[in-house]
Image (cartoon, rainbow, N blue to C red):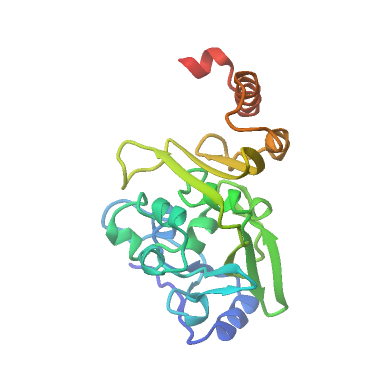
Length: 264
């Protein structure tokens, strides 16, 4: 006998939030992570113990706009929609192109990638170096949280059951900043990252004014060291060999790697 699943699909965000305040529900946007998480043996429907709330159709969660030069991205924007949006930076689009196959990009959402909180999440290193913030909304109002505080471990996030992540906010960056993203996997796309890297740098007259870097898929959360980044600010480009060696050694120490292990 097939078990019944209670599911809700409201026409506006306020109704959805009211339901979440009344009942602890599983939230489904694209569902590409949720369905895998709850998968059963072949031929058996996924077993989700909580009632389901669908949110991927809510127009309030699919807006992309600029406010005070910051970029606001609706949590339910799919990857395909972001690829087509002229406001999305090239670095984010470059990362999106490495995510799964087109069918998944047509369903998967940026908010879902964040809330899944996988160490191998392709978008996360970039959002960390952008110092992204998340806007969460409930019947009690809005609150803002840095993405580095929101993600606490694999599939563990700082979200109350009656809240929804509504927007990802990318603070304004100067036009002379450079951002890169690299991912190592079995294939260029449609593969889980073995390691991913995002870097951000702003240089003025060969002097580093700002620098940030983050690694994914190496420990339970993204790896970023503000202390190491501060040591590089003020250095001139190209970096001296001694500076590079010191930074690499500090990074390996953070990851728990020895130079011998790093070479093997």
